[in-house]
Image 1 (spheres, rainbow, N blue to C red):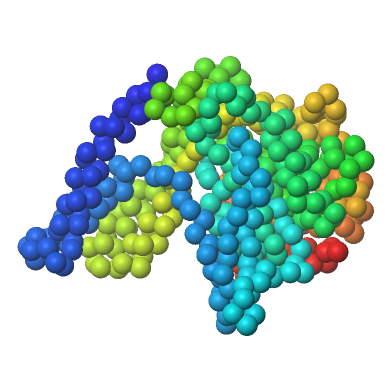
Image 2: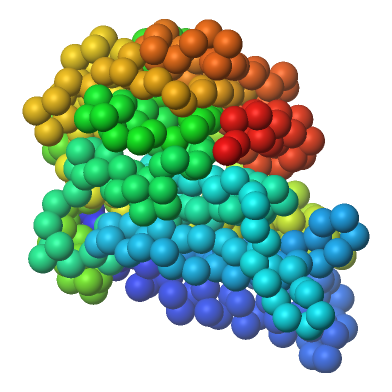
Length: 414
């Protein structure tokens, strides 16, 4: 019922947002006579803010069509490599121009970026992908909004997530591959590679794990505490809802993205309120660059997806409540997950000093589990002054973290 009420609210707000958008343009466009009225700039800014608060935020595009490097511009093409009901495997191919003919740049190590399935779209890692493209062939998992997947495609649980990761590794080819997992996927990625090693399959050359909940018993955050203070049945009865009839996934049980988004906002309500007030002030003062920066951030931050109920509930139970991976008690498909079986894969873990989502030590815990990897092949980075997003996006990622990731991969490339 909650999901249906949310959709009714969206439908009710739609005319208001269209009206606000039209008024923002009428009072803000120089060609309109209304823009010359006293106070028109403030009126336009107020309507613009109302529009952005009330509008729907669809999945953004990656929008990586070219990149600058060494003073040159190189075209980039986004391609689908594999498609599954709940995920697409994308490849970003960088080209160079030889005598007017575009040719793919070769000889660079392939990297699979496993994006989180935790509320936001994979486009949240746009900066991660763009930076990696300087020196690598980049693949990324693009998870599909569960409300867009018909129920005829079946359920999707944590075991299915692991199977997807394994299939993508095999598709690209494990022999020369480097896998980067950001936040939530550190757990299923470690399980996927462990199970492949246990089965005698080829495994990737490196694993880079960034800000993930390997062992949430260490330095628990507010996110961890919510999962441990409520029983599993509370989550099942409170936050799981059927998809309404106006989506292809009608009837599928999901953890709705709008609830996750509400949780995101509730963690720092003052900061978001101040950010919107600053946006209003930027518009009034004509600081268009700062206003555009605000739009870019919230176009991404406010675009959320629904997660399949099975996957969400299993993640809460296995990762945050029962800690099955660090306790050595996680069975996937009847096989006990044993990270100590991983050999021939180097490990790099990365944590942010100020991470309020995955606390210090939670990602580094992978070193205690991957005892089959020699100590000299296991490395850890703590990024001073960085929060959760700062380790994979923004200035610190580009200037402090990426050079170390690049050198780590290069040191283990074939």
